[in-house]
Length: 331
Image (cartoon, rainbow, N blue to C red; front, side):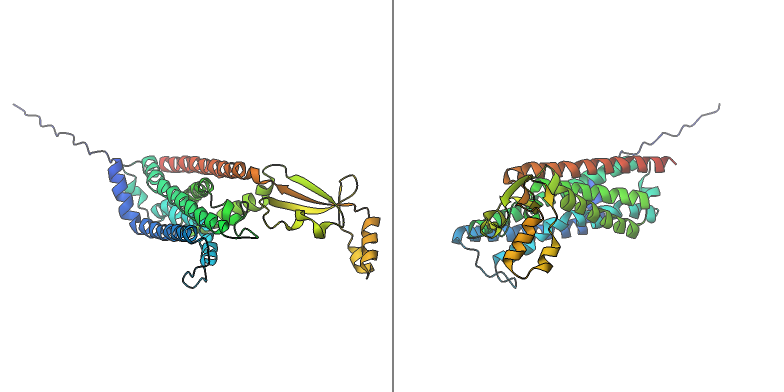
């Protein structure tokens, strides 16, 4: 009699979210902990300064070597402007690139963890904390800025449309962090080299932020135009309002019909007296001066629009990374 022996099939337990969370923490605990500590220190400093200013009614307090709360707040306000870039270059860019460069993707992306499941795990377990830290940092910086503004007379150190204030809004910070994280992942998936992906991410992040923030932001909506007769500029609040909450887009000269006219530089070189200069300017058709600006009531809508821009860019880059990784794995 022949006895047929069968070997039982052993099924390996599927890697769950708890396992991915533990693995992610083990791999990135120093980066996570270090960045979280820096953000926590900045948040605590901002809240302490804001509480002190609100309690005493003045911002004239010494703060380490910075000379006062105004200088300290100016320095801390730089952090939200750079935080998304830090996430992009040092947090996201090496994730996929390191796996490809060190050939560990062959082991990591086994039958237990597919490339897409690994990618989704990284996005959730690292991307969500990134945007959370960005929102917390922006909220704390805005709190300190508002406290400083409330005790300053004659001018506002932090105006709403000023880059340090505009970009510290939590919703805008979330957009920057999401975009930076998605950009770093996409660069790592395409280049498969850590240093190259970090350099490419930094360059693209700076370019995109510059295009949106400097070139496009002033024209999210058609600017309003304020016109005044030429020659009253010196006494006009249109040019020197210390509490101006608007975004100044551009200014210049116009004729009687409101058409822009380039300033006649020959007048400045041809006349030594003010009367002769003024007559020369008027002879060239200049009747009015104008200023194009964005009013203060558009602040929130501008911030929502900028968040939407970077949110859509982030979604597109994540989709690109998904398709690229999936196609590369199948190949």
